[in-house]
Image 1 (cartoon, rainbow, N blue to C red):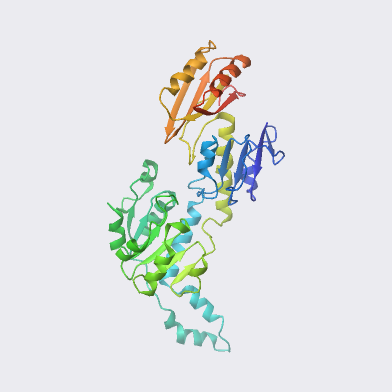
Image 2: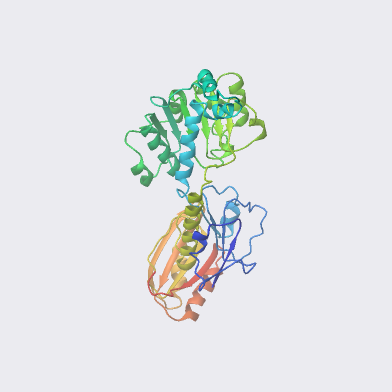
Length: 394
C-alpha cells in the first residue's frame, strides 16, 4: 500500500488514478510519493520514505531538485501537458501587442449618452493598430510550447524563426518545415520583430536575455516572456524601454517595478490557468508517479535518466547510485552470490548519478531481500528498492 501526499488542490481526474486498493491519500506523515503544483518545497523536510515527487506542471523551480537527487528522490514534471494553454496565451498577447484592444474596451466603458455608437465611431482612430501578418517572430526554445507557438504563428501569416540547439527528435518532427531554423541566438535577436522565450530556468538560462541581448534587437521589437521570470533581466528591459531601444515587453511574471508602464503588459501568471491544463497536468503527474512506484520505470524526470523495461519477472530491484566505474559489475556480483539469475537489466547514467533496473528470476523473498541488503551496504549506492510483480506482467 502506497501513501501519496498532496500539496495544493490536484484535479480529481488525476487523483482518481490512485486506486483505493493500493493507495491512500494524505493518511501518513511518511509518504511514498508527493504530488503538487506550485507549493514551494525548499524548506520542506523530506521524510526518508519519499521515493518521488511529481509536479503537475512543467517548471520545477519550487522543488529543491539537487537535494532530492542526493537523497535518491526522483523528481517528475509534466512537459507538454499545459502547452496548449500557454500557446494560446502567447498568441493572444501577440495580438494585444499590436492592437490596443484592452485600451479601447476600457475607453468605451467611460462613454455616456444616447449617441454612444456615434462617439465610438468618431474617436476609434486613436485605437488603430497593426497586423501580425507578414511580421517576423523569433521563438527561443522549441520545446512543447515553443514548437506549438511557432507552428500556429506561421498559420497566422507570420514569418517564423526558431532557435534551440538542443531540440529533441520528437519535437523536431512536430515543427512545421515552414519554420526557419536559426543557427545562433544572434540571428533571432537581430532580425525579428517579435521575440518570445520558451526555455526552462536553469543556472545557464538565468538572465539569458539581458542588456547585451536587448541591445542587438531592433528598437521596434517587442519581447515576450512566458517561461520564467528570471530568464529576462527586468532592469535591462526597463532601461531599454526608457531609451526607446525596445518597443514593448509582455510577461506572465509580476514584479512591482514592471507595473504602471505604458509599454509593459504584466499578467498574473496565467499561462497554464485553464481547467483543461490543470486536468491534463494532474493526469500526467499521477500516471507517471503511479508507474514509477509500481514498476520503477522512470519517464519525464528532471533529475534522473529515462529508464523503461517491461516487467515480467517475479521481482525487480531498482538501484540509484553514483555514476562510478564497475557499478554494474558490483550489482551483478551481489545477485550472483545469492545464486540468482538476472533475467533482464537496464542501466542509464545522467551526470553524477545512474539508475538501474534489475529483473531477477527468483521467487524466494528472503533471497531477494538478502541481495537488496548487500547492495544497500555499498557506499556508492544511494537507494535500493525491491518491487514484487503483483500482476505477472507489467
